[in-house]
Length: 289
Image (cartoon, rainbow, N blue to C red; front, side, top):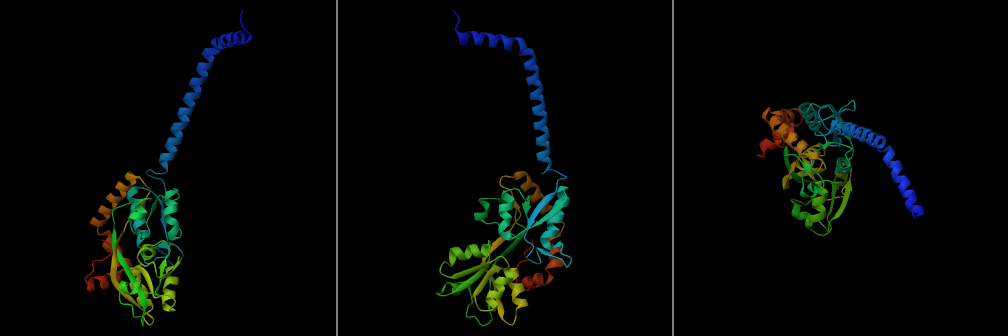
């Protein structure tokens, strides 16, 4: 005696046996189609990072003469010219993606940009989330203070009641958080707002990179002075997506070639001649090298 379920099973098995050749043929067709689609998708994905794909460079255009806009509103500066040379080396059209400095690393991590060229210091903290190229610039943190201030070094900022200002998400802010925990701290996206804090006496010092402090002290000679001897040495590098060793290798090869062709010297003479003369006169090596 065959149960009702066993009977159904037998009928089903006969049905499968009868149509098995057609089903196998259909499965083969679907499998081949899926493979073809997968290959197409993979090719499309790789084309977004290969030769010919647009190179999207994240950059904060508020840091002249490295990252800025010309009178017509077009991206200009040392980093823009460096990005152009890199794109040419890679055989890819260039797109500068302007944004605030604090948004650069998130944009890289979410793949909204391919790399960062924005005078970014390669720190251990940042290396936890992104990778960097070899360094191409060497600078340090310095101080802008009021002309009538009693501050002579970074040690004076450790006294009670001091106040400091810094640009958001920079190493100046990071250093202050770690080393000046008792100082009142105010940060801004715009570095000129930090300068104004010092000029108007609301902050005792602005912590920023050496060249910028030099420039701001010259622009505000009547009210400020720069303490230009770096109390922390830093290096700038190109930000790369974590684990993208292929891109890292290509960028490092470009930097070596660009250096051999005196590219950094030419950029310095074009955009930073006064600063270059100043540093060489004080025995400090030029930042781009």
